[in-house]
Image 1: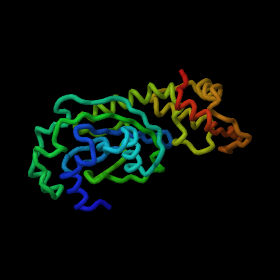
Image 2: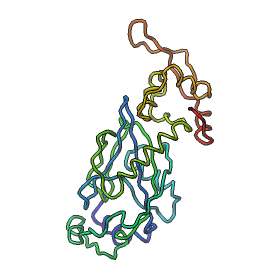
Image 3: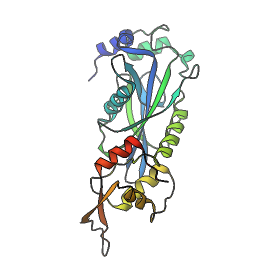
Image 4: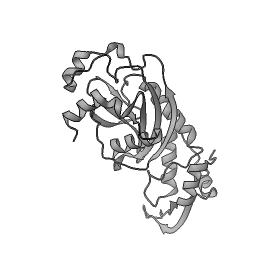
Length: 258
């Protein structure tokens, strides 16, 4: 549990440990049983919802900061993580609306206009994907809530985060054709119908069920098992699993699924 002393130290002295004026925001997509959701947080001193984010420690790489942020919010480690765009428009954080008195009352510490947090900031966007049913959500020290929202029923977001979500979703859907996303979102053994449903949900469109899984098999990403799953009379489809070695290689070098 974060203490008030830790919050005060971060606000007053955080610039000593974190890089000022550069932050990151993470669009964390969650998939489970043909549902696609997005993780949002509610900041203590901001009325609406926004993407989870944070600052980069002076001792860590940018991708390490993003991975740390994603793990701290979801409780899940080693998720697929991709940088998608940098956002740096003037006044993107709308600090001209900063209410010094309100922030002080809510956070329990005086936050002046010359504080390192209240200034123009460039944000680097990352997206990640996980199975939302396996997550244990945890707000950060500056937020009061952390929830999954259906991708088709999102609230209006604060700052420029509506644009971030559009860009993240667009990039994720393009890269689905070049990276074998799915290892963290399916059971260890799955049917072709299940992986087909995963890709349809993430892409938001229909795929040819007779051809798409065959492309994954042809690329050597899936291994057909001798086991079958009984799902009803005369319905026992074969189970598959990922070839982890080829999967990791494809993540590193890319593939072409289209």
